[in-house]
Image (tube, rainbow, N blue to C red; front, side, top):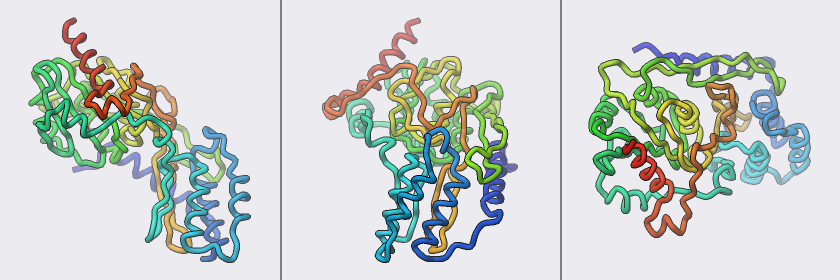
Length: 342
């Protein structure tokens, strides 16, 4: 099978990033200072959100390099590097070693969760649902279909989607839940989106770094999503998508693609963002660093790094969730009922 448009685009951007990153790269020593300078320089020349986040990377580098002394090695060095990377405030930035992986968590920890899987399973699905390709699905009522997709890392086969949409085809409204979906593969976004459209649409735009300067970017490349084959079942009736702050990365891209389409309503909380395509590089000591390298914007050219606002902002407080009440899902069910009566 030939690579699709999105795969070709991602591969092309990856190749360009790799080439620009390797050009005239200094030979850093495997020492605390050498590894620090390598890490700082990789981020300085390849990270893509300095301007959007108003980050003074030069000052940050001076601040953390001054903390290196004769005892800065091993875990202490790793923690220093991880602390510096946290200044980027980016869930796509990680330092990876054989003993630990750094991860910036405040993009979601400082916000309400607005979701409880046990509450969903017990009080709304009655411990009775169907599942395929990582998708949980059920008819909540004869008129309302429900899909919960917890991760875009779960591969979706076209055959599995055929079964899901055929099973729900008699419903009038679909609730599509991507709360706590931390992302995964963009190809799954493309495959899902193809079931909701009848013509090719613009999925968004992506840029790549063309040089080491913080603002050295290409012109935006448009990427598109095409409808699934005509013989495959599609959902062309109203859709209500549920989001929370932990809707991130590829799930965030899915919301960016779907929001604004005819018949689509987004309910819940602002998504967590993650609008930079991540790439990786290696330090002299073998640790690797992952970082946002190519910024993605929605079809209107708006950045997606900082999340996407819902059409209807609704909170599901923890105390209510613990008692079996999911206010976001309840709101969607009520909204679906109103739509079905029209």
